[in-house]
Image (tube, rainbow, N blue to C red):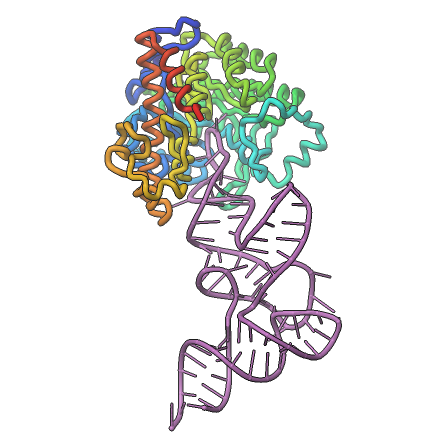
Length: 404
RNA sequence: GCGCCGAUCGGAUAGUGGCUAUUCCAGGAGACUGUAAAUCUCCCGCCCUCGGGCAUCGUUGGUUCGAGUCCAACUCGGCGCA
């Protein structure tokens, strides 16, 4: 049922165009996966998501386990039925919350860091201190979570995560991993990566056991490569995770902003060509060209939708903030020339008014535009890889987008 | 006309003798990468070489080492009585 077919490759040997087949339809790759953490892409109906160009949605194990609960999702007929989204769905394992509710919690640490910031060796004592007042604590067996909703205690292991994901009913699920902080030093990265490898095996074994007891086809499972900013660890992780019989791969963890390209390259040269690769949590326009060129087939990111809800709008001439004063009397669409629903029908002036008056429609219209913008870039990449014009398109787009 | 009450930054507020005048909204800008996110941060009297400097609680005077805070008069507003 799950299948990946490559149609054409970039001359550099890494980038490619393909089709992933899932029980809920085909995914033409490369493609951008829109994020719907709690079983909804915030402010959008499934029809709007589809019309904006998204082929597939990513939901989250941790959030849906807490509310409404995976059993409840199952009772509602699974994610697809619950959300009324008939296309493919993938679920993240909760591995990102290991980081966002762990060391990152309260410090607003993102998965990117400037290359100039040196890694901090995690001395046991320092690390223990960093773990205080956190909502996620990592142990060998799994992760102790304190609910972000009501403070209740929960334990997520690789097995538990996979079971929850089977209950949720996505087409593609992820192995449970630890997303490491960009501040982590070699020693911690190594320990964490090795544990993530053990978790990958446990996730896969659990997944296989569940599949054996099922009559019908189950979801595909992707293993996640970690290793952080370290070349040797990234390569080691790519080799190990490739050695397991996953259906595809995720590339996770944190990166040096300036050098993400290198890290993705190290990994994708090792991952088996014939299986799909998902770059987790990446989605700014420049990142997308890099990811596709370096051989990623899928990538998800909260950026287009979160930024949209805060007034950030992608345009061919770079990102603007539509709530800025200068747009109050601007009668142009968000991005002149854009073919999305929002740009076909509304002005910057109206949308800045919607934001200023905190009208819900502001979030919807902005999200529609940003998703359209991103999915459109990626489908153009697909077209230009097929026609042999990828390099030209990349130069043209990035030249204009980052002109200022 | 008499009496009572009130006047604090664009709006609303806190502040009854002490050092830097509070908070919310509005306004200006920034951040956001597997969603703790319709969130968060900064600025919001004037000047600045970004260290700071100078103002300021209706007005004027007074008491006091020290006043947004106490006193008096005045101005404006609200309420009541004529």
